[in-house]
Amino acid sequence: MPREWIIALQESCLLCDEEEVLHLVQQIPSEHQTLSTGLRSLARDFQFQQIRQLTLDNP
Image 1 (tube, rainbow, N blue to C red):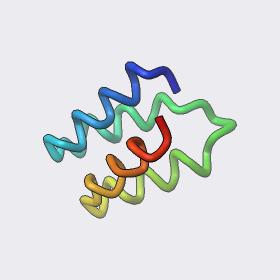
Image 2: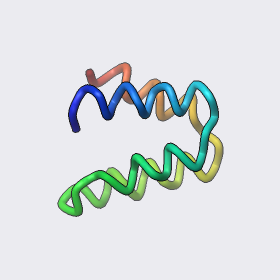
Image 3: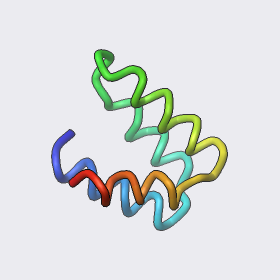
């Protein structure tokens, strides 16, 4: 995903904005369904810090 998308995801996680995180996850291409499913699950479980950490580990 583009750097701008990653930054938007990180900011949404900092704000604990589940709706925006889920909106961003919907933008992940279908060939990366496993990634989007995992991120969606983390967001629904309010694991925003974990999502953010994943994006920091993989710039």
